[in-house]
Image (cartoon, rainbow, N blue to C red):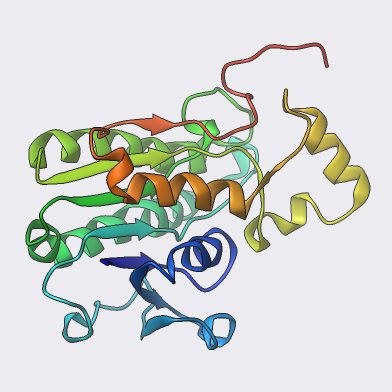
Length: 232
């Protein structure tokens, strides 16, 4: 049974991952809220990634898997974005992630082989209008992940999931009616938006021993958007 730490696992993709992992692993969820996971087989740690220091006393000596879920979706024209917006996106997506990994690095090294799973975005590799802030923050994650994977191989594996638009509370304003949902689905070669379960399945795989020879990779779980050009 592996010890898995989810940062932000109380809703959306993080919650789906927790549900996927809870029965065959010992799952620790560090998040601001608790109500969605109250009945689950997990250990909760009160934690805000942007402001708090992780309480290490509640974690095991060895951590076999880490998933960092907090993120943002800021889609606005560049000319209207203040510097503070870039700083906020970088803070929640990247700087807070670095802080977490630095704090639990000894626990990750204590595992026989630990796995870190991070989240980027299809926007980090595709030039998409109105995505300058979030694409910059997610691009930092991809570069960081590859460098970290190289530095800590073979002890720690590091991989990134880069979704397209996924049906989560964070993306609600883009999918909150049938017209928006249909238009979003049509933009993808597979003609639907992603689900939290789509992301949970690949995260579970990357945390497991089934992926023990995979590190430093960015997985585009995006309905084919980043690689396929089809009639639209």
